[in-house]
Image 1 (cartoon, one colour):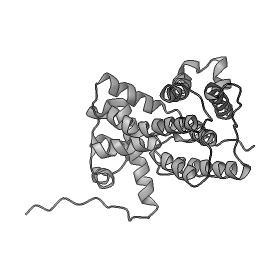
Image 2 (tube, rainbow, N blue to C red; image 1 turned 135 degrees about the vertical axis):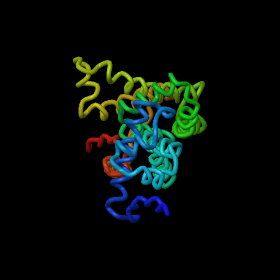
Image 3 (cartoon, rainbow, N blue to C red; image 1 turned 90 degrees about the vertical axis):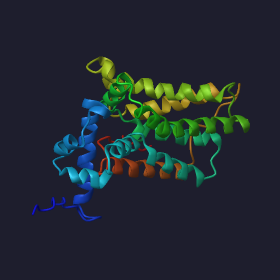
Image 4 (tube, rainbow, N blue to C red; image 1 turned 45 degrees about the horizontal axis):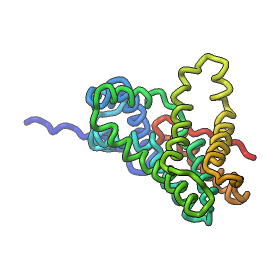
Amino acid sequence: MNKPPERAAVPEAGSEEAPTTRHKILMAAKTEFAERGFRGSRIGSIAKRAGVNQALVHYYFESKEKLYESLLRRLFGVTELRSLERFIAGRPLTPSQELYVMLYFMSFGTMSTYDPEMERIMFREYLDHETRFFPLVREFVLPWLEKLEGIIKRGVAAGEFATPDPTLSMIHIVSFFHGYDSMREIFSGTKFHGKLYGRKSREAVFHFVLESACKSIAPVGVGLSTSLPEDMAASLRVLIDEIAAAGSGEDSPGRKTVRPARR
């Protein structure tokens, strides 16, 4: 009589092994998807890269599709958006202050961090005409865009902002971040790299984008406030620090946030 196949030992929930195993699988999946694309990747290969039993991959993520979605969800800062919304909802912020907070998140949060493997995943899926990838990107990224557009629209309605098209103003801001990160490899090894992507660069990027955005949507003859009350600014820094700590922890798929300098 044949023996039934042995089940993989599953770490107890809350044990130290559980987050470590999940982290290993996510890291291995990111590399696998970057090298082979979604269609070419195999659960068995991901398990081998992670050094775990294949059954554990199914235990944590059930399927390749759900593993892929879980990876993208973290890489695109879905959890951070909820943190941003809670921060804004709990405080009486003006649209200008909401814009400050939004750009702060975009400058220092998970989405601000360049990941070469993520870039390869995007290019590979684009070349392979993978239908699964871009719907997920839209699902995860569009809420950020809609949030920024909504802030600009509220500012226009309140008389704080002046722009003929809030959607194009949103695209203008987002395009800077996208272009800034996509040029990183081009500037690698040049005199520009240290200035643009050095340790203090994100602080400079934040203030540059904030000032540029405020100038582009400020009513004629009006200067927008580009600061927060100190207690709110301190709370925002604490929140970003918490996100940074989580981003460097076991459950992160490898991207680390940049901690903003104290002012």
